Every structure is written in structure tokens, then in C-alpha cells.
Length: 406
Ligand code: HEM
Ligand SMILES: *[C@@H]1O[C@H](CO)[C@@H](O)[C@H](O)[C@H]1NC(C)=O
Ligand SMILES: *[C@@H]1O[C@H](CO)[C@@H](O)[C@H](O)[C@H]1NC(C)=O
Ligand SMILES: *[C@@H]1O[C@H](CO)[C@@H](O)[C@H](O)[C@H]1NC(C)=O
Image (cartoon, rainbow, N blue to C red; front, top):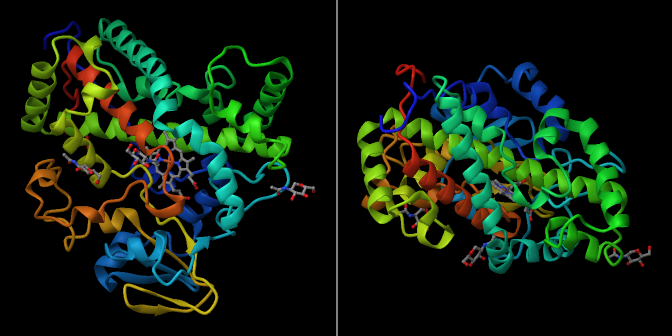
């Protein structure tokens, strides 16, 4: 222990087993449905992974739904296909209405409409825009460091809770409070609409260009209603904060559980940088062991572990060589494909070295999906995770208070 406090607690996090199934995009809107799906659905007592273990790589887990656990299904379901067929988002799962569930970047299911929205948002995710936001990420990392220092002087801390208090999606600081969105759910979604509209009328509180600025620019042209404006903001916050917080929590948890990995990772960051404030997005890219640890966390503890559902097109299509009739809801079950021993040796073991050894089927892990509906925040996430994980690891030493915590 090099800094202060008696011991460091990473606790409770690390979202409970049930949460694993409940983390989805647009969670705000889907909480009741997910609750039903997880606890009350007739199939709820049969975890999907167990089903795949028993019945193989393709499981019919509802009358009209198939779950895939094989790596080849990724391209066939989510990527642009050679035969030109398009599997669209399942309108039942990604359902919409005129108010609370207005159309937004994640639930837009018509490919042409989605393309317009995607184009509008792409500026906010460009390399240039990300660079402009870097100082905010650094600022939040500094805040996290301060909070850890202060709390640890008093005793063990809950690192997961500390991560959760961060506005991890930096773009919204002038418009919304991400924490309040998570806590207040649907009610807050509508209140935040008022905030944004007030901002539109009065002008933003700063010169910083953010997501909302890009949406406002195209609002007229793309006929974006007030409700849709609020829905976009909420979708981005939900998509970007819970997911990033989960992977950071998971990363620290697995590091603490594996002292050999922890030691290597600490050595890397402390030999590449002499102080924490030297660590910025560009330099942190070179931390290859940290990258491998993060890839391994994404694999073993994917923030979105479920199958994002798509509908097969008119006239059917083939998935990994199997014929699937039109109108079937299908997806790759992320947790199953990344814990499938056909893809990864000893899949339940946290083993970052597998990302260098390359004897596993590494392409089977796609925590951000692929194709036209792939996560737009992937590059932003890598900056956040690298900078935060590296700076915090440079400043502090961690250990689990409860070594048996699982
Ligand atoms: C650990 C971090 C993250 C993971 C694992 C993740 C994962 C995903 C996944 C799996 C999807 C596809 C969802 C679907 O098919 O319905 C998605 C979509 C999306 N994500 Fe992320 N995400 C992360 C962070 C972020 C961040 C930081 C942002 C930025 C605000 C973001 C913005 C988006 C957007 C805008 C979409 C919709 C893209 C589209 O449909 O065109 N994500 N994400
Ligand atoms: C917006 O609405 C107008 C009038 O209803 C319509 O003509 C136009 O095609 C719409 N634009 C888009 C991009 O949907
Ligand atoms: C981590 O994963 C990404 C995406 O799959 C890959 O491009 C990269 O080479 C991997 N690197 C390491 C060191 O694990
Ligand atoms: C992420 O960055 C890479 C390299 O700059 C770029 O090719 C890719 O299109 C970016 N992805 C997204 C979703 O912005």
C-alpha cells in the first residue's frame, strides 16, 4: 500500500448476476419489460448460456426467436451482407411512441431514417470532436482521483460507487445531469426535455460544441420533435454511462482478483509515465497490456451481455448456413458467444495474455457489435477507459477488502 488508507474495497459492484441480464440500451424505457423478462418470463429460470450448453449454438428460446452462440453469426446478423439483405432492429424490442419512447438514434428501426440520424450524430463522434472533449475526460478523472483520496483516508471505499457518481458522458454537462437521469428514469427524461428546450431558446451555457448542439443544427431539416430531442439525449446518456461504468468496475475487480495481472499492469503504467497527469488519450493508446486487460474484461464481463434483436427480412435469409424464415427475431447472445469454449480456451478464466497469444477466436468478442448499427461511442469509450484506468492505477494501489468477493 503506497497511498493512505488501510485497504481498498471494491464492492457490490460489479453489478450483481441479475443485473448482467438487465443491462440493455435505453434501459430507462425498458426497465419494466426487462424485469418481466428476467424474473417472470416462463423461460426465466433457464439462463441462455445453459441452454446453449445443452442444445448447441442455435437455440429457439421463444416461439419466434433464435439465439446464436457461434462466432460466425456476428457477420451474418449485424454486418452489411454480401447478398444485400438487411436485418433490421426488432420494432417490438425497440418500440416507439410519440412521447416517452420517441424515436432516437438507438431505437430508429427504418434503415433510411437511421442513416439520416446517424449522419447527424457522426460529427459528435469524429476524431476531431473527441479530441475537443479530452479535457473534460481528464477533468472527471481528476475528480475521481480526488474522491478516492479523500474517502480512503477514512477507510475502505466502494470504488464502484465512486465511478458511478461521474458524469461519464462528458458532452452533457451543460445540459443534463446524467446521475439524475439514471436515478429518476422516465420522469427525469421528460424534465430534461424542458432543460434542453430552455437551452435551445436561451443559447447554450458555454461555447463547447456537444451532442445537443449537433442535433439542434439539423432539427428542422430532419423534423426532430421536442420529444425526439429529449429521447436522443437520454438514449446517449443511457448508452454511454452505464456501459462505461460497468467495464471500469469490471476491470478493477478482475485486476484485484489476479495479483499477477495487477502487478504487470501496474509496472507498465508506472514505467511508461512518470506521473498520472502525463497520461492523455494519445499516450495511453500505447499501453498494450492495459488494452489486453480491457479487451479481456469486455469479453468476460460484457457491459451489454444479451442478444440485441434483429428481424430477418422478406424472403428469409441464411445465418451461418442455416435457413431462417422471414420475420424471425434473432441475435448473437453476447455472453454465450464470449464464454463458449469453442471460441475461447478456458472461457471463464480472466487471462489477458490470450489477446497476445492469438490461439483463441478473438473475433468472437464484439462488445460494441458491428455493421451499420455498431456502437458510435466505441472510440470515446476507449479514450475514457484507457485514461481513467491508467491514471487511477498510477495514483493508487488497490486490493479487495473481501478477498472472497465474487
Ligand atoms: C463500454 C462501453 C459501451 C459499450 C459496450 C457499448 C455497446 C453498444 C452496443 C452493443 C450497441 C448496439 C445496440 C443495439 O444494437 O441496439 C451500441 C449502440 C450505441 N452506442 Fe454504445 N456502448 C458503449 C459506450 C457508448 C458511449 C460512451 C456512447 C456515447 C455516448 C455510446 C453511444 C452509442 C450509440 C449512439 C449507439 C447507437 C448507434 C446506432 O444505432 O447507430 N456507446 N453501443
Ligand atoms: C419533414 O417534414 C416535411 C413536411 O412534413 C416533409 O416534406 C419532409 O420530407 C420531412 N423530412 C424528413 C427528412 O423526414
Ligand atoms: C483488443 O481488441 C481490439 C478490437 O478487437 C483489437 O483491435 C486489438 O488488437 C486488441 N489488442 C490487444 C492488445 O488486446
Ligand atoms: C474509430 O476510430 C477509427 C480510427 O480512427 C475509425 O476508423 C472508426 O471509423 C471510428 N469508429 C467510429 C464508430 O467512430
